[in-house]
Image (cartoon, rainbow, N blue to C red; front, side, top):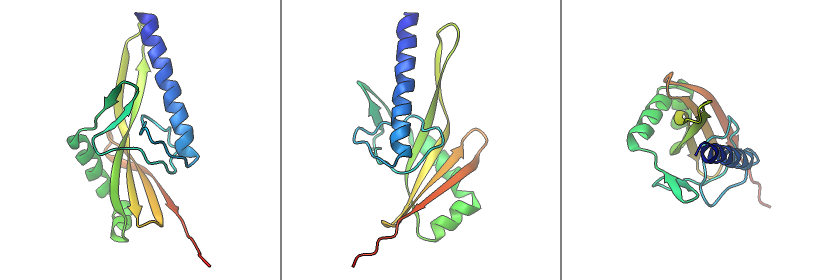
Length: 149
C-alpha cells in the first residue's frame, strides 16, 4: 500500500512538472491539467468551467474558493488598475501542493492560486494570490502586438 501511494505521489509530481514546463514555454494543453506550475506562468489554456482533470479522476474548484481568491485579487491596487484598463477575470487556477510524509501519508492543499486576466486578444495577466496570507504576491503581464501589412 505504501509503495502504491509513493508511486502515485511521484507520478503526480512528474505530471505537475510536465505541465509546468508546457505552461512556462507558452504551450497549451487540451486535457486541461493544472496542479502547480511553480511560479512560471505564460500561456496555456486548459480549464473548463466545471473544473479540470487528470487521468481517471478530476478536481473541481468550488465557487467559494474562486470567490475568495478573486476577492483577494480585486483588493490589490495593481489588479484594480488592470481591471480599470480593460482586463477581465477569466479563470482561477489553484496551485495544489502535494506532500508525502515519512509514514506515506499524502496531503494536498491549494494555498496559492493564479487569477487569469485577459484584455481582448492583446494582453493576458497572471496574478498569483497567496490565499493563506490574503494577498497578491506576483503579477505577470504578457502583451502581444501584431502588425499586419
